[in-house]
Image (cartoon, rainbow, N blue to C red; front, side):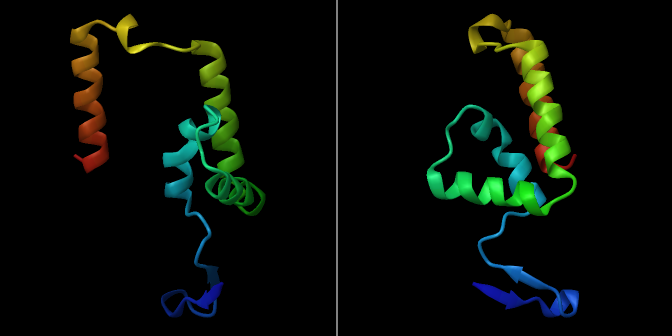
Length: 94
């Protein structure tokens, strides 16, 4: 379904299209194969339509390949606390 976005002039926006922000939030689940099929299809459709997000996805794939998988038990409690604090600050824009 497509609707006219009056705030953006005559630009048409499909209601089920992902935004770049939503895309970024789903990258990890996509790389882990954890997305349900409808969400995966929306994710992959976004890759076709967006010039920037495929670059971001490739960067994330490279990071995961370089770092490997770090399990929670591999991280000391002190480092985990620092990372979680920084993540919370980043998520709230602080």
